[in-house]
Length: 372
Image (cartoon, rainbow, N blue to C red; front, side, top):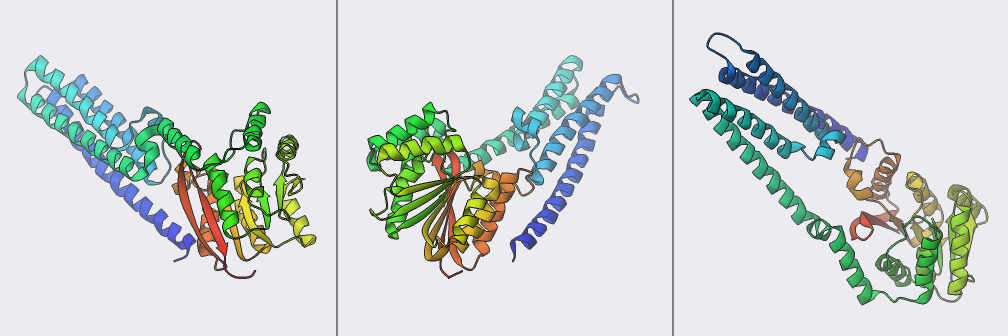
């Protein structure tokens, strides 16, 4: 099934589930209001307390229903997320509030009905919280080290793996320090990720590499380190200040003869590369503006050969790619990239999540298996 058709089915299913859950929630509200009236009213007369209690139930339940409805449509309620009371946790708090109010009523009037309602509400609250904790534990078990250990633990694991596998040299360390001194965004690849890129390039015997997104050139140094003496990296950078820092890093590392940095919009530079017939390239590393990733993939295919490897960074977006209805242009472009990579017959592709000092993200890798 094509991705666009699959998204249409998901959208209609989400609407159906959302409407059913709202109807169930409205039925639950009606029952709870009736219980509140029974607990607060004098026989044959509706008191002001009963009206207030019923109104409070409607408002609180309506809030959580709106949260659940938006979550069903993959549109999280920002205020609910800030409070941390979405889903089962929110319903647990809701029932706990009802139990507290009914318990106070039972104690003041010594009404057994109110006490029974309070016990039922308390039991419902306990069940909701148990459900929330169970779901939370399952998510931790599935998500791996970052959520089990936290951000600090994941960074510690990265540091340990870097110490085991990464060959630290003065030039790359100086490049990172220069990037920090120049106050460039701290979005370089990690040392282990840089070594990963180097291994990928060496594994296919790369001699020509095209990088889109230089920043301070840290990843470029890793890629250039994979090349033979006559190899070449062309790296594209839009920001002149970033480019100046990168050139300084290349000169310090003694790799200026293997690296050519071109400034300007990447799409214009790619068109110039095609006009000059400078391809094909063996490896593409694309780590630039996420919105243009689908177009960068189109250009990579034009400039590739059979056997070329295309690598994209930042393809998980901290998990935001599962948001079908996101209005974030970067998320929408990343979803389009995944759908194109998965359906393009000229490549064999996959994507992997990563977790560590760079947070929750991932790489996408595509091997070109047919000529363009």
